[in-house]
Length: 536
Image 1 (cartoon, one colour):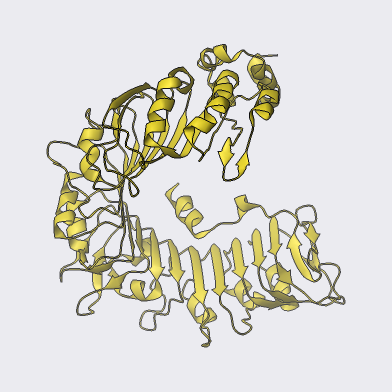
Image 2 (cartoon, one colour):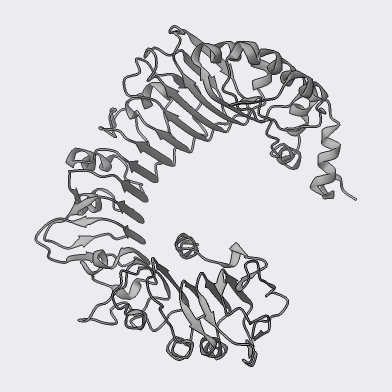
């Protein structure tokens, strides 16, 4: 039997016997052995009033392959425990939460060899005590994920500079105030860096002096000037995902998008007084596949908006500014629409038949063209119940070709019913049905039994009026049937459904509230799961 065929649990036991000095070398031999070190054991040295003393550390066995640390005490108090840990534990993930900047310098100087094995490093630096403006160099050959947060609110703005030699680094997040006098971090190697999140974009050239030639994803947070560096000299040639969260977006920012011709995903989430012109985005990014706008005010020009490559358009919680004329969009490859019904009714698609998935907040009712999106196969609706008569049937019958349907009610003030027979007759191709907070009855189950192609039925957070005298309903072809927090009459002790009995294990945790014993998330699709499903 091959050694690599052994279960992970047995390999882990064998790996624990390897001396700590040899573990770094052994894990570089095999990908399987390297994955064993991903198992994390969190050992909290000090957090609030919970402190692990030296006696407990000395009695702890050396069998930890990974070690994570989080502390908020003074560095001098923790030094004896740190020394024990450095002698006994193989460091995989390190969390330094609230460490003083001077203590971080001392820690880096004293434990250089211990840090060489770290793969995930998260540091939150405070600066209440002056640490000078020195520079510290660290070799981190296995580091892949880095989170570096500088808090200078309670001290001076001069931080020590750390220069990292981390050739395997893939994901970096740097948070610091814009008034910091120098860049606190320098990455010597960025040849494998795929994702970067940053609060002060003007630091990008000094933080990454060797460029970002392979960067795929850039996330910029709370920046008044999100592109505050020389874009023509410091290029991001392979950037495909750009997220602007809390940034100031104006005409200058939108014109800078032309520097990213290969951009495929643009996410803008910000409350800004400036209007975002959709034509400026379309003209700058011809390869854009996914556009998501949150909490923004947008405008457009009178001519047709052309998105030749767009596949996903998300205009959730946005406001149109202008004379109110509909925006005509030419997006022949558009697959998914997401937003409020009012937003979507403000669009006129040149080819609505391309849309296969809609994710709505509120009911979509189009009286002039009631089946404009008859090609939609996947529909997810979150319905706020504001006391008015809900036109559920009028909404969903505008989409006759549905294969997946999710209806979730929020803040329901009165019972809302839905006919199972009507669903079975209207949607003959329906394979997946998820209902949340509805009031259903025995006839609904009978109707679902006649829905021949239905494979997954999910009832969540509602009521189901059945009685002990109801004859069991036979679900011939259903593969998955889930209930969660569904209230039924107290006298009902068995659920009136046959097949599949092996998959539907019911329990009564709160008297007359039925739930399935296993709530399988793999088969329960959320709104974001729908988008991912279509992209694949």
